[in-house]
Image (cartoon, rainbow, N blue to C red; front, side):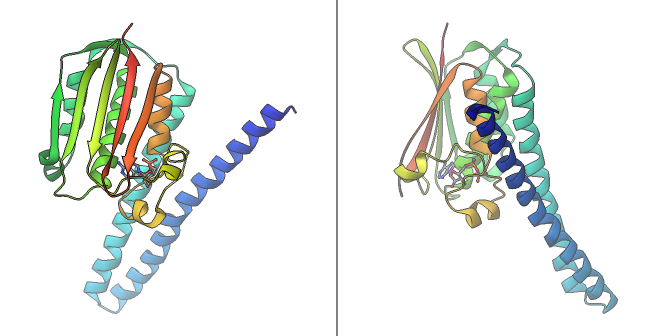
Length: 229
Ligand code: ADP
């Protein structure tokens, strides 16, 4: 086996180990919560039963999110992009529409009308994951700016939050699969650790480029650019 195939093999093994670990945690927690809920029910402790049933609900929601991110990632790896001319403004608007009512109110969206040749599912994935992070990593009372504009010969999408920001050292690593700056915080927010690797993959296979600008404590801006050919 040459060096390159060995590296790919190692990456695959690491990925399977990480994904299995991420799935095992909620499954173990569910098993424990079911056992405890049964005991609580047998002792007619309704409050405790409710508490553990809620824990089971939370863990299964976490698994659903992780599985849906893993499916997005495998779709990106297995299928080629299917490009069509779409209105990018409409796609961003639709993704903002899927946010919770509180988060929707925080978003300030400005856009020119742009028809562009791209895989629409990929573009939705990009917007959805960047919006999710902007909402998760900034406080509820902080605004989020979303801008879609022409930048010379390029089309740019900027999503800027006023949240906790990302250190320079972490900026180099956040696009790696399963890399999280703060594991506990990401998990508590329902993060899977693969959102940005999905974004990077989807951007690059549509010949785009992604950059992050951030200062700790001031917020982060993710800028995605596509050549307007
Ligand atoms: P996660 O599901 O944990 O959010 P991502 O791959 O989307 O995973 O992001 C990787 C890590 O990058 C996150 O765990 C978080 O620490 C950091 N991060 C991503 N977006 C932001 C942001 N807008 N502000 C601050 N930190 C961020």
